[in-house]
Image (cartoon, rainbow, N blue to C red; front, side, top):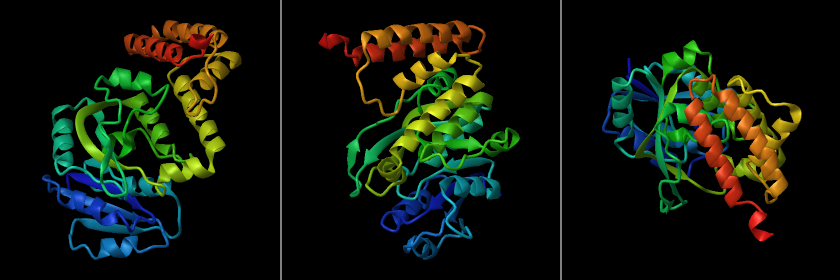
Length: 309
């Protein structure tokens, strides 16, 4: 039985699939299987994978195009490893990634999920942005941050399969590219998530990756889905807001905010965040939640319209 199962859904990635697969095959940690899920694309991605000679590669074929959530869930179900590592078909990992995360999870039995920093790369593998992620090591703060936004680089993550199975955690379909965010919120409700400062992912930003496709065609759907995840996170963490307060929170922390925050907006938001801080006192992450609320409010002030008046 392999120690780690790497899960890689594949859909129309023929330009980058070899570098993605090679980055896993060439890991310094060798005890793994690479589960490639063929999501019935129209290019030669799977043919390229089939031509790579390595017994650790296992290809699963979906009967039809089922989407990334279905494919990841299938990979999780089929995985034989103790640990699950996620990988996208157009990114690549540094050769120490699996070894570093395996060693960390072995040494920290109280941690369910570990992630790391990422560099953003272009179509030619050039780094266009260094360490683009907010790396948070304190799992209580990760949980607090996830109420506002996603802070886990998905393709850098490794998790315990037993933790995922025991808590019935799955990727949700029809999330318009935000299934990762919803997945991490679920994980944060049941276990500790830790980010390492080391770069564990080179994330490719192109006009053809999943995030860009969803941005182009489903902007309003993404806005609505993002809000539904934030609302889910608030409610599951037992923060109770009335309808007006919830609307204020979701409006001010929208993924795509098109207007400047006014002084009246800030006053309303101050009341909402103060209420959350008071309710947080009964939680196990009260201190972290208070810090994040104050930090997020401070950022709203900096970016607000009050400086133009």
